[in-house]
Image (cartoon, rainbow, N blue to C red; front, side, top):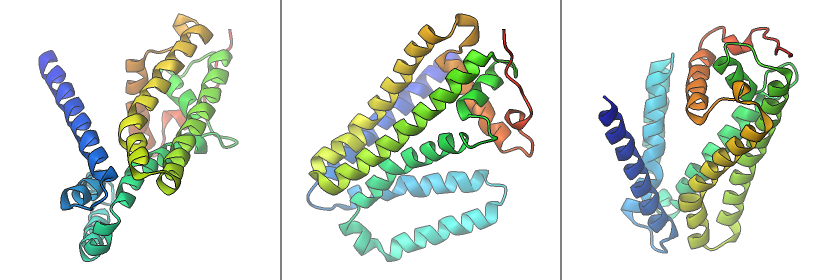
Length: 229
């Protein structure tokens, strides 16, 4: 089973790198091509199909995806000439959504997203130090994702297409990874071993959070008070 997971992970990584390289070439191209347009819009449609399949209101969601596909088809001439907008949505869109996901949890009366993940990973009990750190980290990720979206949009409007394409399709993923690794290094210095979680545990906690967030009553929304030592 382990080798299958390794092969699957390697396949996903290879596909991601190939797509990023092809998108970079298409996004910086002066002359629009059908392949470039397909790479720009197909992932959004596929993501829509996937989300529609997961939606509790599946039929209306599928209807919206079909409507979006029809709009893309009838507007194909315009979209073909301006398909870089599709790449901008791919680049800035996820960053905006992530900034909103993290930022909305910072509202008064809510538990910060990273704090929720820590509570899930530690069975609902964390120290006040961890609570403060994870709330601050939620702010950091919110600002980081917002800046990434702002930089991508700014380069799209002001810079040469090749420079923007380089940032959107080549530089963005390494920056996110560097942020993730750098934050873990800070976490090692800021929190003792028994109060911090590793990258794998963080991903597992996030998956648990997404499942709980879709439920009517999520554990992260209950009255869980961080424990002091």
